[in-house]
Each structure stands twice: as C-alpha cells, then as structure tokens.
Image (cartoon, rainbow, N blue to C red; front, top):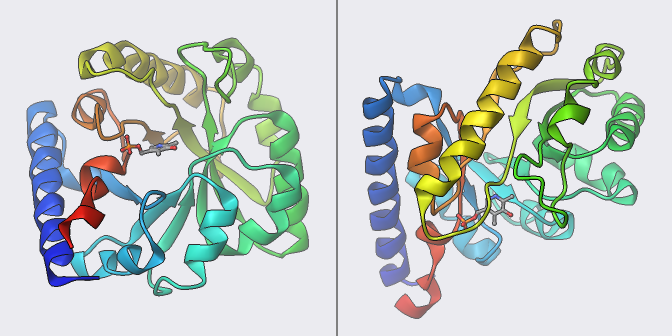
Length: 237
Ligand SMILES: *Cc1c(COP(=O)(O)O)cnc(C)c1O
C-alpha cells in the first residue's frame, strides 16, 4: 500500500466520520449509537489490513469465501461481519471467523446455524434480513413472514437474534431509501414486543454509501459502507 493510498483512505474516513456525526446530531442521537462497518469487498486484504490503524475494527464482507481469505491475512483485532447470502455448506467454515451475521434470510438457515453453533460450542449473534422493497431478486424475509418467526426464534439457544437488516433499492436519490428504512424500524418495533431475552431487536443494519445519512436519521445502528471509502483507491498509487 502506498503512502498516497494511506493518505487518501485516512481522508475518506474523516469525511465519512464527519457525515455520520452530523447525521447523528440531526437525529438527536449519540454518535456511539451508530457503528461503521467498512465493507472491504472491493479492496485487497492489504488495504483492509490498514483499517485498524484508522480506528476501524468492524469489517464486512458479502461473500463467505472472500471473508475466509481476508480473515486469514487481516490483523486478528478486527471483528468480521458477514453481510451477504450464506449457503448452508459454508456455515461450518464461516462461523469461527465472524462476530455477527447480518444476512440470515430463511428459517432453514436459522436452524442450520443453530445446529452448527451448538456443535462448535459457541453462540452467534445474527440479524434477520428483510426484503422490505419486496424485490423478486433480493434475499430476505418478506415483512409478513418475519412477523411469524417469533416462535422459531424463541427456541434458539446458540443463535441470538439481535435485530434486522435490509438493503434499500439502489438509486442515486438517498431520500428514496427513507421509506424502506422507516418500514424496517416499524417492523423492529412490532417484533420487539414478541421477542424475549436473550433475543432482542436492538440493532438495525441499514444504509450504504449512497444512503447512510438517511439511514442514521431513521434509526440505523450499523451502517455498511464500501465504495465511498474505497472507490478508485487503487488509482491513487
Ligand atoms: C457491498 C455492500 C455494501 C456496501 O455498499 P457500498 O454502496 O459500496 O457502500 C453494504 N451492504 C451489503 C449487503 C453489500 O453487499
């Protein structure tokens, strides 16, 4: 990694941090309510390895294989978040590497995770992915499906559900995501009346490069940011 790349990344981080802080202030929320996850899928393990020096310890990957690869190289101080679809045959190898799975998108996956987590003698924190925009090609529970999950969640012992995740429809206009984020928050409020400890609905993982400020205004506790941090970074060398 060149000095120019380091400098560029440090500057991008500062810009993103300032925007997160401003969005929190607008929403009357403490900055500590929101955790930035740097989504490293577009950069090398070498660049990802520089993030801890910038104070970023929460890293996200959407593909399990890419997460396996980077987790072997990036300093062990980071916590990995899987934010993309997890196939059941990749659970065994992924589980020991991650601190949270944001993308649990079926009841079958919940059961398979429960079984493997028990086998590995650990608990795993997960979020339920919701297809709020009801797009055919997207993973995630439909909103009405989600409201029938409480009983299935109640029997989980090694999987702890801590909230919801969504991806808003892609577009240039961040305001277009606001409705989806607000709906995720309403679903969370509804579900939190049915979910009992150790499970809770404390987290909302929503907001990416194009719409994270709106997501924070609507209650995001995790924002997943890739391109505004890393785009064209390789051109800085
Ligand atoms: C890639 C990805 C992100 C980051 O998107 P950017 O627009 O690059 O910030 C966030 N969440 C998920 C699930 C992703 O796959």
